[in-house]
Length: 163
Image 1 (spheres, one colour):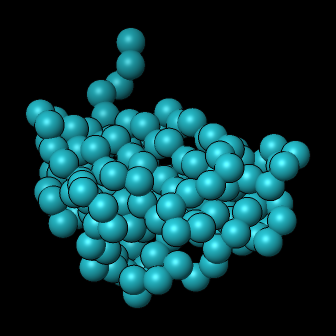
Image 2 (cartoon, rainbow, N blue to C red):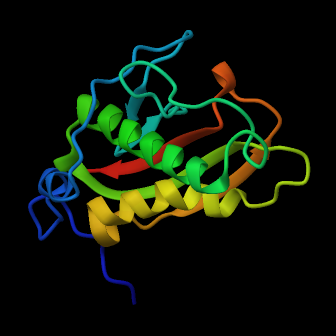
């Protein structure tokens, strides 16, 4: 028998307090660069669009992981993607409504022969666990791709269950 996930107000982690404790603040949601919205709710789930590692509306780095971008730098960029995903969820429904991060899909613009995509996307996964505790642990895919929008090294999308 499994234990049900905590529900907001039922022993759930205070994501805002954890962000403060980690020295992080949620940025403003980056306006879409195409014909989509940053996040949408359907039933008890919020789906984010792919989040790039924008800081103040700009990509701090571009290029392929394993060539111009080191795996360690890319993991840091994946962490930024995760913060941006939390900002999109917060803007739509508020972080306090998160019951569980259900699924994370990470895309890594990979140089030929680079196979460390899981370690790169750990940057996002570790951030969700740090902010949300057990509620932040999730199923995941880490996929290598040849190109990402605007030359970004990483992109992360999230499915979150909400109360």
